[in-house]
Image: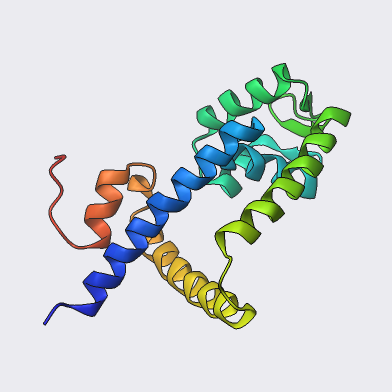
Length: 168
């Protein structure tokens, strides 16, 4: 008899890849990728947020956040301003074009969510959301055990499933 936990993890992995492809395809059609939309949504919800805090919320390295923000700045979506008291701190603000992009992304995401979740009841969606958040919270506690490896996917995976890492 096949292990249900393994079958579930395999199904979740497949679902993750399928969602990634769907979002990627959707992004090509709308000039935004999921991560870019998520970043714009975070800035919109926290206009003036400090760049370091934004990197933490997105769970990316500060250098990666800087690269993303430079692209957004060149596209005219955000403005970065130095803190008046501490020149090392950068505050991030949406521009008028940034706010328009957020609105368009919200509309696009609603259409995509409706399409992807077609056939699921509100109860199904609520159950999946609850279980996904529960599993995500557990995975966050595992990552906190070994934060030095949090940004290395192969090491993080090896730590989560207690298998020896090939990267020593």
